Image (tube, rainbow, N blue to C red; front, side):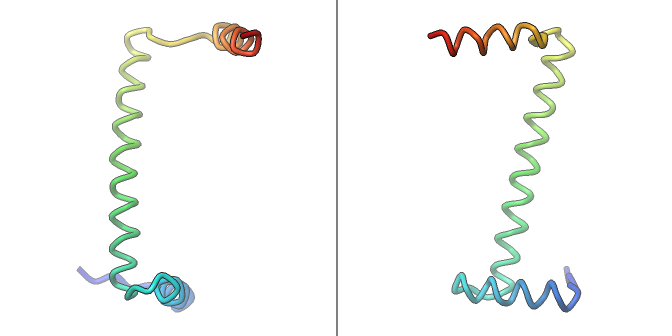
Length: 74
């Protein structure tokens, strides 16, 4: 796979990679891997949260407010 960046972004990537003592390709690989891992984590959290909503497992606005008030009183 080849990826092409506009000159401004390429310059930024080169500069930051050099600051991190790595090659630009290695730096981009790390960024993409981090993004993909985070995206998978986020999608799983969202899927689980939507399942909880479907099952009626949620707090109302008022219930959240009550919990917060109890936390501050403790």
